[in-house]
Length: 228
Ligand code: CA
Image (cartoon, rainbow, N blue to C red; front, side):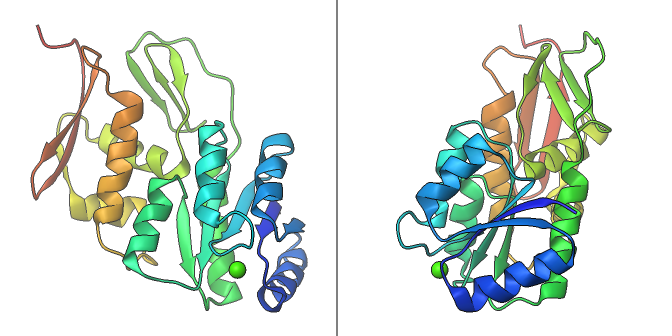
């Protein structure tokens, strides 16, 4: 059971979807307006945002971009009639966690929502720790030099896999398999986009974290003293 904000202007989709979500005992708020969605996320954050791409006022990509820029970490699943690769990559680039192309079955939506919400989990207070990069798998929190870094669900999952094999190259196939589930049919461009987002948040010039690319093979996370 979760608090879901459904942002969809098409009644033919929204009405049965809202009914199905309520039947699954979710607490649903619906709006057809992108502007209103941004306000609601920032003032009364839901657990999950189901976000249509084509909205009358502000499109879904812009909604996602605005809430991420405002610091929201709400779980975002984009819904779109357009299943093409460009939309997927742009969607992930603005900070969506997952993507579902219309038409989709309610069973598929439920399964994907459960997976996302399970991963998002509840936050717990951090323990004292002096490591330059600390990845708390239980609480799903990340600290860089003692400062918490806000990561989306997929950014965290990616970091967790790389961190588990610290100092080793993790192949693109392993990352796609472990971070994006068996429902994922897109190309691995989504991986590069998420790596770039993670790098922007964790890697500082002279800082302790390095995220190296082994071209055509995969990625390697290193944590330690900066290079002399
Ligand atoms: Ca629409």
